[in-house]
Length: 304
Figure 1: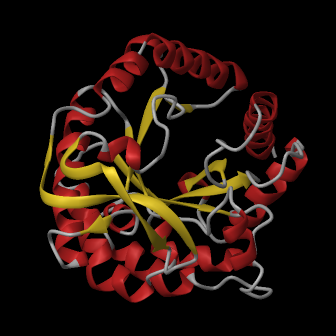
Figure 2: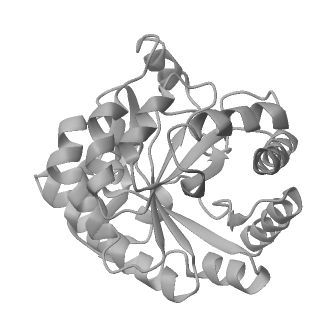
């Protein structure tokens, strides 16, 4: 616990020194972005994991099993949020896995229906999110990489589950969607998608009508046509300007150029530069240099 606390404070300081405006705990207390939440949920068996194809069988993973009714054992990220709020005056963000992505990362032997299971998880996420808001968290982000895999399900129950997870929150709410990083299976899949990645064209209009405030997605070195951002009218758009699949450090000019292109389709007041996805696969020095490039590029874009 002390080591996790120390790591969180270290990365908070690194973010502040790099010039990041909205800081997070860096998920220093989690081994996995989904399992870090599930470890606090009753009704899930981690002792007898099973092998399962996830992201529509893009790759196999060993996953825990839902074996009974779900309920929280207690608070999930209280220690991290209180630590952040005490040690910084900046706005703070906490991330939670989205309900659809959780459903796609567990084996279900109890509910028997993906939509019902998603709503059960969404209720628990909402319980934790409301508590985080009371502790001074300014932005709560739900990570939903499954949103560009199950397009029809996004429209039939994915958005509804996401909105249930965010129900009643007055702080800013965000959903992060992406094509996946960090493993060869994701790289191989993206290589089959052609010269333009237009999957978001199907779900952006639905997201635009949702009660979620912000949408986060990858832009730099991505084949997502930036004109699709127009479909998110009315939302804050977090544009990824840092490539998390490469150790090469972006220049401020490169970051600023992506921001300029995105500003053709999203009003500047609704643009928030960020990273394409998480930086977990990177070495510490690389990650820190990329954070500095993010801040410097955003400053250059504002100046221009």
